[in-house]
Length: 382
Image (tube, rainbow, N blue to C red; front, side):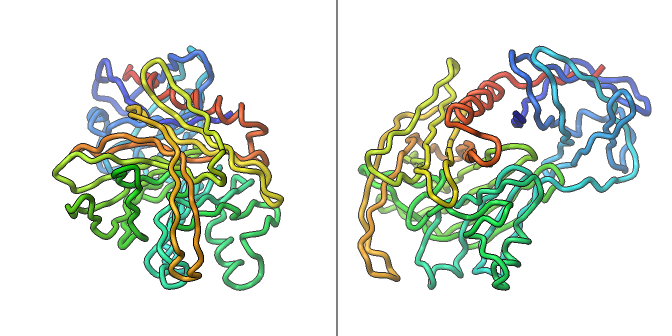
């Protein structure tokens, strides 16, 4: 199974000034890892500047790479347990690699923002949808079963009336229900055992868009908690090959506040599956009740710095459009937000029709993802 993680990169020595830089990537784990490696460009000072960086295997084959908006070069690697792989980095002419990540504002459909990689797809809702469906700042999942990028195709076919993305035509479908909830893993302030939900995002900014990583920021209306009003934003990032999207939640509060990231539950009686690692990383897994259209879907959140508590929460609202009473439930991972300290976590899913035949397989994926966060690959400049 492919497995991709953000890395802490260690450098033990610098290469002498020459045309090529040789590096090794070592896997300290007892399981195979297929990941995105990231190296700060400032550590490549021995290479000529002003051109793109080209990464090759020792046999000369080029490895797709990307310069990120925050000054890193990233590339894909696959390393067996306890193994080491060597690469060469050199300056060269920019190359176009087939994109494996993508995201954009969908202006033709009520200002959704949708993003994807070669495994999964997500979307979140903009202001233009509020008059139609009411407010919702939860995360939506698009179940895809193809390695191809499908966002533009699905929207085009759906809006033209050719094919609805709510039906599976061989590539997957949108079968996840969000409504006035956190959907598949969004965060909100949590006060007196109640979620304080913001509404749809106001502004978006794309920082980078493939081929291996897509990163963007969504800004929301100011939110009021316990009589104090402050800003809210979320930065999302997705790497090729990952089942999870990275979320960095930021509040402009001057005081610490309780917050909760949640997965909507379809029944108050549904039980989540908690996972801990010895070093404190916490994961929560929820099995979405199987639907006739989609079958089984497994949802997971990972918190590298752990959480304070996990509990269920339910509330009742009157839908602003239908005027009907709705009751929603979540499994919540609760922690504390401190001023100036954004919270980073991961959320995503596995689907029985595309790579995960059982809940146990998805739990194993999350377990290895968590361990890899705690055991980063070691990169050495030789």
